[in-house]
Picture 1 (tube, one colour):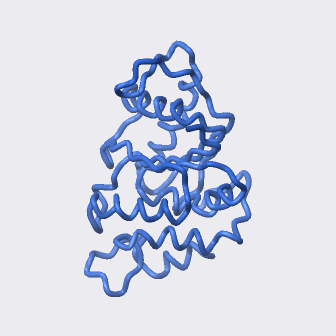
Picture 2 (cartoon, helix red, strand yellow):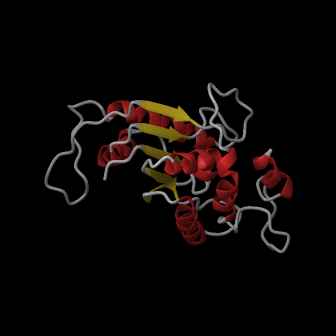
Length: 208
């Protein structure tokens, strides 16, 4: 399946937080969008990886994305090496996106900057015809493919954007997708430990 836009996130909920409105906007324009999570978020303070899997599936349904996959890299410990790059190259060639969105180039969580560089490097390498890849179980080699554009969404740090997308029409959809991650965000009845993203202030900050 060819996609117009492929969105990468180091953790389940990165895509929704960083680009949920843009994802909904693109889908509203009739574009095919997919999400690739690099890890299952298994080191997260709240919830479990299994819970995050279900929450990610629910968020994907809310946004209406065409596909969502998890590459199951090691949360906190994946690196930008040939093994990880080859997996992402296979994914890029599988879906042949024109646009890739990925994590912030600099951020509080180390996985965000690592994921940013890993994905952007892989997008370049994916266009090299002498890099040979096959999908698991496939008999034929994949064609080289390089996205036309690679953009990085802003996350925790207050970086200056090169451009912005008006997602006013899709803010409710974005918030609904984010709050599908019930284990992660503000819930006054939760017995889980507090984290920087579990406060009401953080949830409010997404809107403003």
